Amino acid sequence: MLSRVADSLYWMSRYMERAEHALRLLSVRLDTMVEDSEEAAQQSWLRLVAALGARTAATPVLASDATRFIAFDRFNRSSVLSSISSARDNARAVREQISSEMWEHLNRLYLNLMATSYEAVWAGQASSYFRSLIDGLFMFQGITHSTMRHGEGWHFIELGRYIERAQLMSRLLDVHFGEMPVDAPEGLQKPRYFDWISLLKQCTAFEAYCKVYTARIEPNRIADFLVFDPEFPHALRFGVNRIHGVIEQIGTGAPPERRAACLRLSGRLKANLEYGQIEELLNGGFDAFLADLQHQCGHIHLAVHNAYIAYGVDGALQV
Image (cartoon, rainbow, N blue to C red):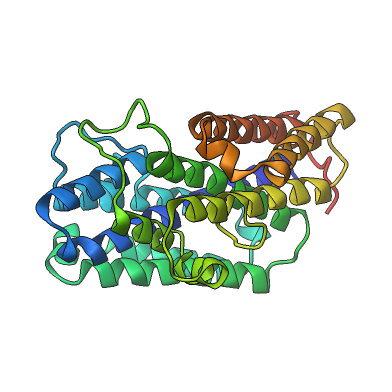
């Protein structure tokens, strides 16, 4: 496989994961908005903005402005519109490597967004519209899984998804469990009871959590589940296990020392999550743990780029 193909598939997947994450957070926030007091609603919007790393210049945060910025702002490189547009650009660059079903579905998602005005969405059922977009992104994952050969191109799609997910999840957990991030909006306070329920729903984890811990909502148990559960797809441990497993499966065409660096970095992070305990993190060090996880994911990204994309030997990977 050409390095440019691996790069485009990897980034297509990262952008799709980024769009889905933002939509899940936004959809849950809109669903719960009517139940909140004015102060509670403001705190929830501040937390969402902080979790997405999309601090706005003005506080307080207006729901309409935040929704526009997160979903439709063309100048926000992490908005849903920008992410899906970037995913489409990467997919188009490797059109011959993906299935026609994948391309057609992604193109429909993009055209749907481009044809939709923010004003019409906000005046109507915004939450329902965003849920329909989430369904479309879930469908793209299913189409990809069902129609694409599970060779090295597939592995780079998986790698992009789980590296992006680990970094996004660590940021989301940080604004709930850690000290306030240095770039958090002014006035952000600690979460309340219903914020923990929202967190589980934002991670599509409410039912899965209840099956493990019953419906008793306890922050310590939520932290344990979202960090260390090895079977839940949005838990950090699950994602890191997938990162390491995918790197093990990617072909050996890269320079041996560079491939070894990828395996060493991902293996170290995998071991940290296999042998970590939530009590140690909650007694001090959760912030440092999450920051270190983000940094390690960044190092893995760079190592993969250096091993399989930047070294410039076309065709080094075997199909």
